[in-house]
Amino acid sequence: MLINIHCAKCIGIDAVPVTVEIDITAGLGIHLVGLADAAVKESLLRTITALQSMGFRIPGKKIVINLAPADMHKKGSGYDVPIALGIIAASGQRELPLLERFLIMGELGLDGGIREVPGALPIVELAMKESLLGCILPVGSALEAVEYDSVDVYGVETLDDVLRILSGDEICDDLLVRNIIHKEEKESSEPAQDIMDFSEIIGQEAAKRGLEIAAAGGHNAILIGSPGSGKSSLAKAMAGILPPMTLEESIQTSKIYSVAGKGNPLGGLMWRRPFRAPHCSASVAALLGGGTDNIMPGEISLSHNGILFIDEFCEAPKKVLEALRGPMEDRRVVISRLKAKVEYPADFMLIAATNPCPCGYYGEDNRCTCTPSRRLAYISKLSGPILDRIDVQLFLRKIDPKRIVDREKAETSAAVAARVVKAREMQRKRLAGEGIYCNASMNSRQIEKYCPLDDSCKALLEKIIERMGLSARACTRIVKLARTIADLAGTPDILPEHISEAAGYRFLDKQNIFE
Image (cartoon, rainbow, N blue to C red; front, side, top):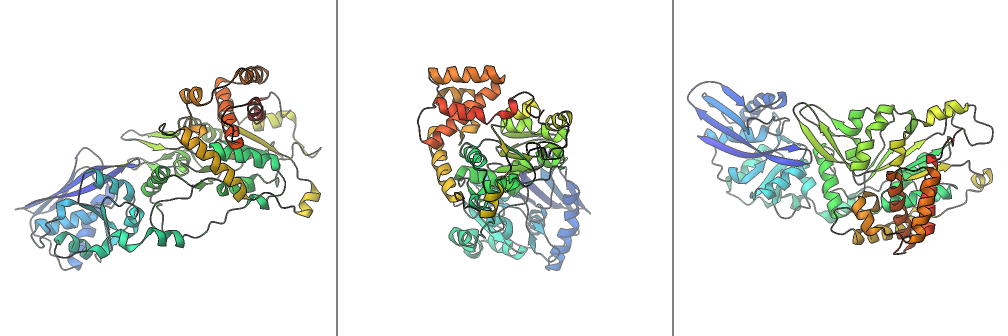
């Protein structure tokens, strides 16, 4: 008797159909075919032991298990439950009339318990696309899809729960994930994040203004200053002024985390923008993503629609820094291997922080002990292509001791966030239908359409380009930054003062600035 069970495999943030075919005929042995990796092959012993512990028998016949399509590599332990169900149904030990109407995934424990598998959100979306009756997943994985209302998602803890659903003999609404947890309960139980407030950071008003502009338009920024000037604190406070994600952004970000096995532990989609802070010694694969057959997302994809913060930027290997160039421009990363090629979205804000020189004290009176050549060699790790892609370049000065002692309170993050949200709303309406949400993501065609310049702005921009020797990319980024400054000011048109302020944030393009 031939049994077919619907499963899935994640490629990037999308799932593709996989069918587990099981046939029991005269003969001996259990044969697993279909380009399965070691984890899938090991599932046979787990499955047999689990079935026997639950009182099921293993037929003394030839059992052929095929994972179709046969030319695509299968990986992971998520095929345990489908294989076990196929053996039960093909051997006639239980009638499962609904078996072929559900998409089923899960790792099977030796006692019949079902453990979580990654990629729940793409799997549920595939079940919707294939017009299946529903999706059966481990309860921890199913909770990620609590906000998907157009398909029945069941969260199960044991193989007995799965058999209850597939038998069709009883109503199993108690296993529906939307009945296990409600969105309101989830949101009220979310722990508050410990985010530094702008009011807690003394001084650095110019840097705060620059980061407000960066947050309002999704622009990349770099903070350069001596140790203790507040670079890391300002970067971490950025998480408190970013606007909440839209539904589309939340779904895409949640799918990346789901595939990586880092889904929301409380259930449902992710609504807070991610803040990732890998160490400067992270490898290229850790940043971009990698693997062999199982290509996982890296830090730049995990920071999609959020912030990628890299401290001590100039201490990172040059190979790592240069690897960021493509994703910063294309807003995606393509990882190619001999047998696989995967694309992940990577629309992130890069916030970099670095000292101005090896000793760290250039710009503080005569405290710097570095020679001009050492300073230039240190800052030269910021290559021209990298600097072209960083719109907001900020130099943090030493804070006045009196202000440190007096601890004057500054503007709160909530006040800054209100202006950022208002600017982002203007951009969302302007860019509706373009598939982007902020000014930093505009391409050349969109810049020409949404960022018209009058004669005075064109004349000023021409003088700036000639004086600073800017590239064409740097010029377009100045225009996009000026559009964001205009949005913060609430003006419909870009004015010369907006162009002037935007150009002022590109001081690293000047020649010999650290000599």
